[in-house]
Image (tube, rainbow, N blue to C red; front, top):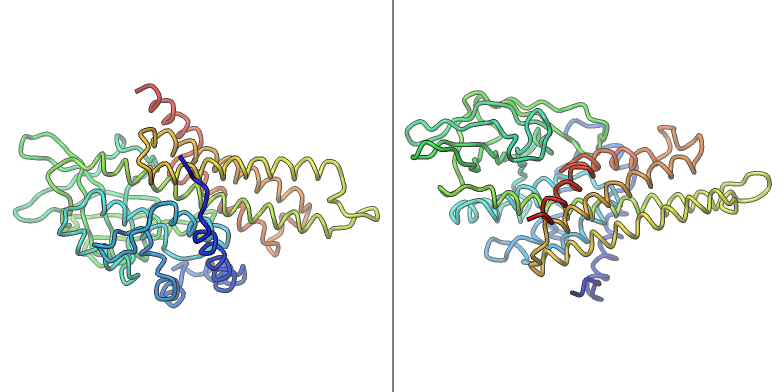
Length: 376
């Protein structure tokens, strides 16, 4: 299987990098992360009207551009590099894929075109108070009353959940036979009984919310079939996307750190000439390149329909989690005392590395999933 990038893809990457360097410098990141919203509608409009980035991986029949995951991962890698503060991952990755794989045709046609245009922001309410990305740990149930459903319970660590226009909720429902199945429900952000609280998290560039549902009216957007398989595909695809975003951030940290040690003088020479600095720089390069290869391969494997995609996605997520975190640690240490200060930008990527390390499952969690997929 070929998983190198074409000339057109590399040109797209170069153009996107220039765009994001202009629209998302660290000064803008710091400004937006200090707000409760975490992003700005004007910037979000430019991302969509000028580049159409939310539409890139949505099929053409639903108003998208119809590209594959590999193209979307280029977008995610560059966004991770620039720490773009926008509801892209929540809307265009998590929620769009949940609707694409789990909703009926009626609701795909209703929601996906609006997400593709950027007119609708959406969040996927998957995890509950344990924070586990494990369907078996889900406890929220939907109660059916005549022609509608009502939700009561808590969904936590919901990405951009405090600001999204639409909430897609994964919950259990009792079917006609008395057994339970998983289904997808849509809830308007202004629904009666829905309380949204912004969580105080380490990484302020990526906002998480706690959503409390008290007899909230909801619409079932999935069929009468269980959506476990659809959510598994959504989860794997999102893990691959996040892995590529993480290697983008790790590569940016590595590059910035190398530039710093080249200009930092100590004992009359650049600290880049010190042996210990060279060792750390070599470790950073090896970690990032290995994670990058795993992430790129996983995206190409998904597009090609490879049968072992579950293991491949988990390898990519585990590799990227560890590489990003270790690169961030090395970056802080190589900056010395200034690396621990607020004014230095290194901590922005360090905190994103930490939040991404646990989002969608830790490295240990994915190693367990990888072994389970190989045992089957």
